[in-house]
Amino acid sequence: MRIQEGLYWYKEKGLLDANTYVIKADITILIDPGLGKYLGRQLEEMQEDGIDPKDVDSILITHLHPDHCDATAAFTEVSDAKVALHSSQLEYLDVMIEETSRFLGMATSKKFEVDIVFDDSFNIGSKELKILHTPGHSPESICLYSADEKTLICGDLVFDKGVGRADLPFGDEEELIKSINMVSALDTELLLPGHGPIIRGKSNVKRNYEFIRGFYFR
Image (cartoon, rainbow, N blue to C red; front, top):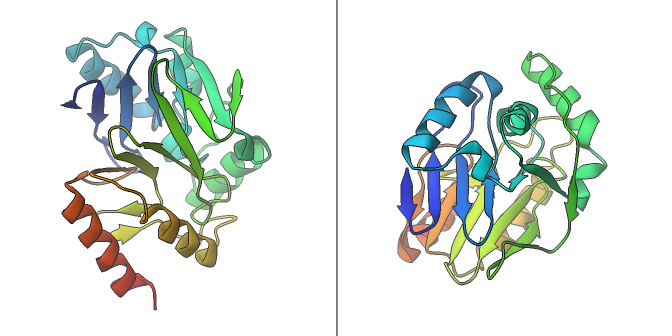
C-alpha cells in the first residue's frame, strides 16, 4: 500500500510476521521482509502496487529476529536484491537468529549471504537515510531516518502505545529506554513501526512518546 510518494507499507500478515516497507528512490530498498510463510502474499501486494521483486536493489533489516528477517533468503531467490546489514548486525547474525528462534519455538531461518555492510548512513541515490543504532529490544537493532521526509522506520523500538520487549535473548531494558529517548528528539511526522499501525502527524508522534514515557518508564 502506497502511503506517500515513493514509500509503501505492507502490513504484517499474521503471528510472528512484521510490517515491511519499500522505499523507491534512485534505487529501491525493502526493509524487513518478514516471515517466509507469508512472502507469497507480500509479493502479490507488491505486484499490485507495480513493484516487481526484481525492482528491489537492496534488503535492509531493522534487527535479526525471525519475524523480521526469516524471508530474506527466499526473497533473494526471486529477485536480484543484495542483502545490506549494519555493522553491528554482523556480530550477531547467526547467534541472534538461532537463539531467538529457539526462544520462540520456531524453526531456524534459512541463512543468507551479506553483500553490503553500512554504518551511519545508507545512500539511495539522491537521498540518504540516516542510520541510528538503537539497542535494547536487541543489541543490533537499528532505525532508519529520513530528515527530508521526517520519517522514522523504527523496527521494534516503539509502536503505537507500546515498546519492544526486552526479555528476548540479548535484550536490555536500560538500553531500550536510552534508544527511545534518542529517537524521540528527532523531528518526525511519520513513524513506521515493525508491528501494528503507523503514526501520522508530528503531534501524534509526540503524544505517543509521551504516553510511552508515562506508562513504561517507571
